[in-house]
Image 1 (cartoon, rainbow, N blue to C red):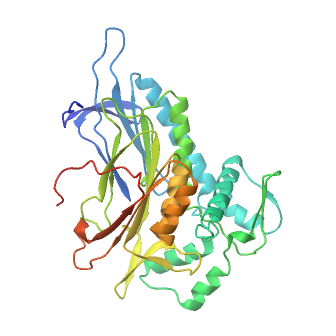
Image 2 (cartoon, rainbow, N blue to C red):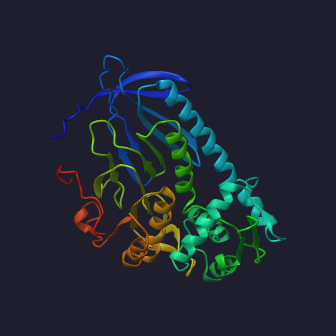
Length: 373
């Protein structure tokens, strides 16, 4: 029987290089997933210092990056967390499409003129995008930069683009125009206006790269969360796993499910916070490349996978193609589980009874036994 851990205990927050002991129960609230893990201090043995839970956060990628780890040595944790922050900012400078000086934005200009050599991280991510475009039969498409840029503008003004505007933007997209030279690690675009957007996979990729740093620093019991894209290592002390709450379809509703994971990644995609409501129709920020339109919601998908890259990509894809087609993709891969949810009752949006929930057979059961509010 698992021993209950008190609700209040010590954790250490690494902020500005200062170690602060605080008596709190920290909760991580992400855009699409809420991670709740009690950070504990285990007693020291005769020869070893205590195992302590450490937590840190910093801003990057337009959100908060959150780190947790259990270890006996605060110096090891501090150095690892600092290395993660440096690497995340390095990758952001390469992969973001918001910064005109990023490698990704510059590639959109250079690759239309001829084959262009790219950095190792960008090449690795492009290969992942190519693989997911094939797996999804085109539903996953990282060439939608022009289309997503247009939709961002219209969402801010709560308007829909016209059919002609959507058609014109779609004409500037298409992964078939991206030519990857595997031997040279070069890229060529045969469409002059094509623009990349890694919003459906980039955060997951960065999570994986950061997690490798934590593991290399001898922090196997750690977790990184970037906007609901998480990768977890070994279970925290005296726990079966890291406790994750899957966020609801609507703000204020109870979590769809609470699960435990260890040595896995989890990601949720959906329109909980990013959508535009026009004439009673909720249009997501997630775009269907076949129509150029935002997915009609509310809808969300959660994926558990070995890597955060694959979890991120499939979660977004599942919102576009639905549960059945996404589950077929999951079956082609290994150790991937899927949950999809959409609303079936317009008049009961704050009750999970109004949610149509589908999961693959191996998706973790709900460990939350408290009554649904």
